Length: 235
Image (cartoon, rainbow, N blue to C red; front, side, top):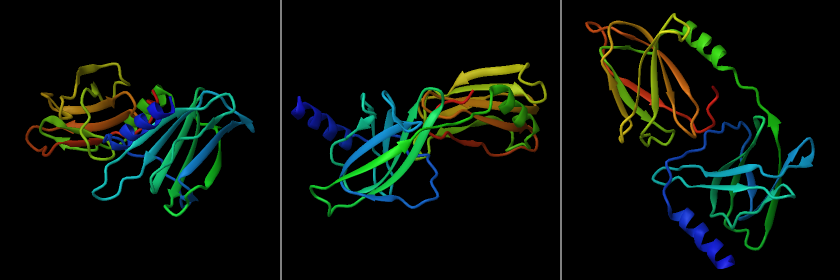
């Protein structure tokens, strides 16, 4: 079993992933050995079944990698040795519980183990109605001849099968104009009449984005370059 686990880990290390850590942490990364033990806590007590995602921070000409684990009864995960580099760790559970941690793994730490605790905090997301109301008040992000562009993740990779819904701005979402999905290259296009709209871009594993825009056939130009951050949809 141990050999199988190690082989699986090596495959994960080698496999390129179209993900990138979207965590924004002001504090510098904490120094760590290659062997890491993480304990997730809620109200100071170990939390079972917490999803722990480890994202390798992308450097120039380096492939992103990510690993996902779940904590056991003791609230602990202990991944196999991490290669040297910088990592963002995201712990999340039900009830919108979340904690973030950034590490800098050094190479000269053979045999040592670094332990970290992650205290889960309840995050409050705005409701769909609140987000839509805010989008109604936002200025246009683009004036276009045609509604088209590309959807990408934070690493720049295209996202296929993104759900795209367009509603007329000023109707509080009551007037839905069209709905379709991005193609295999993340591209999208739809022929819309002149007017003001709000586009909703959503995909599994990414945060939903609302984009107000205007179609002006004679004066518009360019296209939309949409970036969806890694994270749960907040509708």
